[in-house]
Image 1: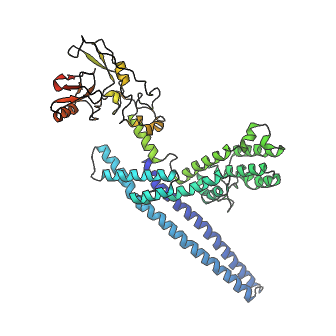
Image 2: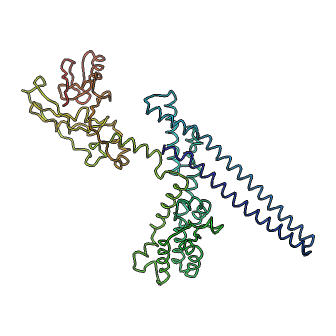
Image 3: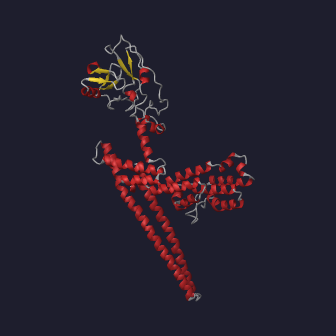
Length: 476
């Protein structure tokens, strides 16, 4: 459900924001109109108003009312847009819940595959938007039919603000804070306060000490004392600051004000103060904005595609994968020469080298078994084989960096996978040992023998044998 959480949360937050902004603007305009009408009534009672002055005031009221009407119409269009978006996404979320219920019950739906493809397309489109490839994301979503399921506009807005912060400009971020301050207040965000702090630091850097003091008194002191005022403009209570800043904010402001006591605060010799002027400070603000914007919109800080990949990799990754600690590629060694006096006709026992093999791991199919009883250890032979399976997602070169960040799955029972058919070697697909020591599934070997006149060719060494030369492998 967490993967589909933002589908409804993002348009709902946008709808709530547009409603609040329109409500405040309309109430402010109507309040001014009512105040003007009351003033005209008082002037008329005192016979102090001329006909021309009354007409001018009435014309001004009509203009304001027309502006209110236009604002209401614009707000209705935006609210209807987000409401339609929520209604369009509801069936998709419901289908996801139905798929999970069917999976739990062991049932399959004829539309399950198409629904999963749609969900994957949505996650890919969102990943492209998160990475800043907006035009590519729009084209991909349009071709995949998931345009209404990906909030590309939200990611574009976040990217614009992040780019402004990279350019050392706080104006765009403060405007965003002013538009979303009600939500930021509810999540107890300190983004607006930190942006105003950075503006104060930049004024100190430029040597504008008087302006820095004015800035601190106007924006930082009210927030530090718990009264708001660090936001980007508008009403003092609603659009300014995160509100309710406690004593830590006041202590931080007091430390920042100490910058004014140094002749050259950039090189004052105190790391705590010099750090405020480093370039890393802007990168911290950029990361803070991304985090707070995701919280405000209800977006996950990690994309759904990455979360799905991590969950899948965690399910298949074992302690012997290349991405696991100590699971690097081993150096190849030549296989040990077989002992002529001890063939496969004598009694032998196969021992599984790992009790926590994953499905698709090549060493579980042809290189994870060692021979006891024959006097020959297969360590050198297994080291010469490919260290990891090409079909193991956790060992894939493109997923190594991501797989290295997830824990390995604990397995209490091993699975031997046939390298030829990629099927579990159990039941009718018993593991069979070739004369050269390679192990494959019976079904794949039977199919190979049927297609080649009874001859079996080892795909690794090229050795040829027949079905009568095979021996059953018993794993204890």
